[in-house]
Image (cartoon, rainbow, N blue to C red; front, side, top):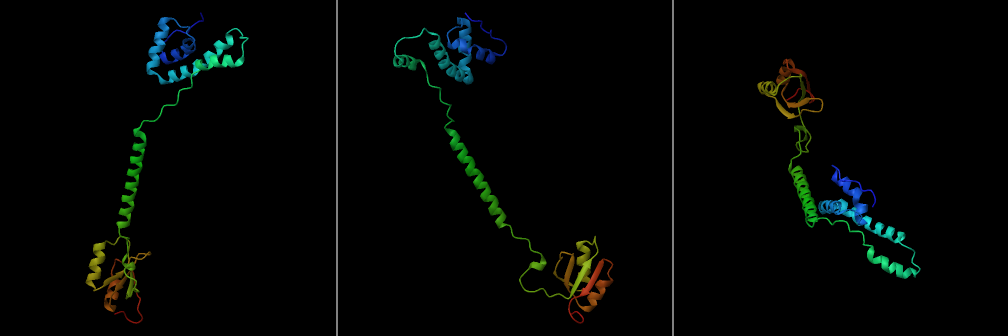
Length: 202
């Protein structure tokens, strides 16, 4: 009998080493029962055994004395001993349903996200309100650090109203009369105040 590798701490590797002898029926009863017990739980070893058995059959046929009969008869005897390779395991029945539901969920979330984006109103500054041309009396720029409260109080104090702004340069277009424009020029938080209308502003 051939030398057989004993079962060690790595059961899987040990069983793989024994599979050729198991396929040829060369193991003793104890080793054969250990291999059979491992095969019950290990699909990889079962697949390897299924691939090993046809090879062992061919080896046995090659080692047997030459048959002087015809080739067709030899093939007929050999075919029943060759088992087809086991088919690959099929995926679980629920897998296509799970993937389909996942796709539907992703599509629904994408639709909700796009709808929420469409429902959001586009931002429009004061300068973008309406298509009519903006008519203002003055262009005013405030110093950096001016708070919204300071700006509002200054405009209210001099009867000025915001027409549009701020522009890309940070300027504001205002309705203001000549006296209010002069007062804005003198305010410490104003960087620049220039009239936009010909002649004295209204």
